[in-house]
Length: 102
Image 1 (cartoon, rainbow, N blue to C red):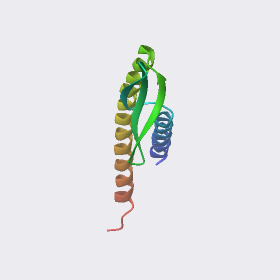
Image 2: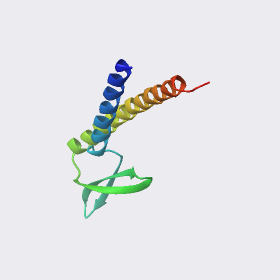
Image 3: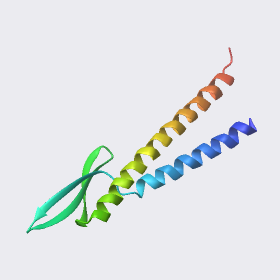
């Protein structure tokens, strides 16, 4: 039981860290708008099932590279979160099975 408690704590901590990273990372679909012969970067993303747009600033290759890097990182973080959720579900199911009176 103690082993499962430690594993549960570790998984929940990892999940919290991932969720924090996801909240604090700029990622999404890149849009470049041209206005008065200047290019501007916007990012479209979802929050609470709503599509939102955020202005990033004037176009630069560095900003585009950073957003693309963030998009790749977020994809990996979401996969890690999915695996953690699966493990947590399995632990909950095992706990449920062990505590049923048949």
